[in-house]
Amino acid sequence: MSGADAATAHAASGVHLLADLHGVDPALLRDATAIDALLRRAALAAGARILHGHFHTFGAGGGVTGVLLLAESHISIHTWPESGFAAADVFMCGAARPGLALELIEAALRPQSCETRTIARGVTAEPAR
Image (cartoon, rainbow, N blue to C red; front, side, top):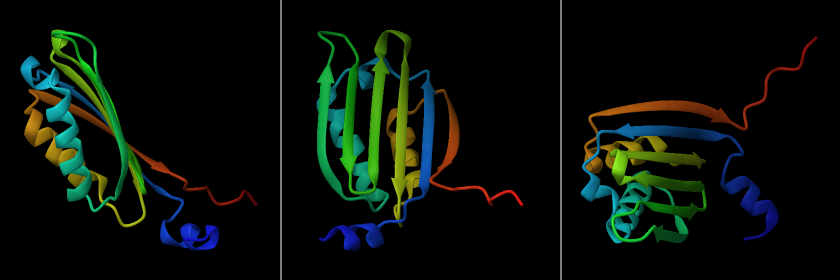
């Protein structure tokens, strides 16, 4: 795809969801392989195209940090099993639907509570007159 084609394939604006998931079963927050698979399912459910992923476990009983690079941007997660907490970051542009990805992540991790912030990215304000 040429540079011009890439620019028209995806809009420069998108939606960035930041989710704090509290009260998650610690066992669900320690398995890097399962979290990798979860984020891949979430990306595909949202209509995103996965380019690359990397996940790291912080030792026995430790948390996981991971990221999927998407043609539409990224999904990342950081977990703290000792606190039953996960921070998920879902940013997608174009026709992808980040809300669907986050719904799938929440359904799998079953947090007691989830606080989500939505940020519009790449949207510029009208110039002042």
